[in-house]
Length: 412
Image (cartoon, rainbow, N blue to C red; front, side, top):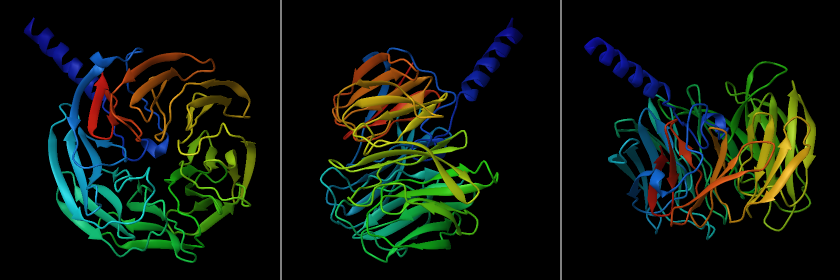
């Protein structure tokens, strides 16, 4: 009997371990926004709130997760201090906090001084922020030790403020430094261990960028490419090892000013990008690269396209959940519209897909869940009673939501 009990406990431990999942950047693995292992109840209620933790400062960046620790940015309201925090995912207890001196800069009223999401690998957490118009990048160990910090990588100029997040590719930290100062923008890769610049690609600039890049496995070459999106430039592909530009295509309207806030995603060899402006043109473009010749497969140009939220693909379906709470479902392959429904609310964060459910949190702190399927079905609505401009994250066991003042853990 004792052996049987021990065996059962061991099996349960293995099952629990198997469900663990890292969420290493904005919107998880490669920015897809999808979890491969998480399980959530179909109906989410207040009883599913496992814990909540009051946060210092403010910030609209999303959580990232690695091996039981959750990482998050916050900043003082005066912009003079940048903070990287670590929490235990099981209990919400704070593990450590590292503060960096910062400085105020001009930003949009809907932006914060901590809108960037940290990136993480098995060695460190990588933090990006703007201090007085200068881009800062730093690496901190999983134990909270400062490894390096750079404040000399270039300027960030623009009235909307900073919000771009870094990603990790192999041994590189990759980030877009597009801003509104003509002739002073670039795409950059830094060495994860030292912070030294490995490559930098000059850009014409002219528009502040918020889109976080993704990795694209080119189906024609079988090689990885880093994909960047910016309104006047369009879509740019960079060789991650050399910094060489592989191809570039302007796919957005250039006659009227737009802004690339949403981040690109890739699924089944196809790239999906969106770009828009509040009362202006809005574009969703599906494209595939044939070596150095990208091909537009299909596109949508209307007001249903999201401006701020990123797209999400699941099981052959592409979902566009826009700022005003209208969600549209397309067939990923050809863009055929299957349904469009008004869910309601205002959304600054992007949806994620967990256990076949699309989950997003609106400005009023209402967590909305719908079925990620070819037929619309609203599953649940959970009111967190706190404003939210962030995108949720998951560790494969629970859902984590950062609101204006709290961090919530939601699950079984």
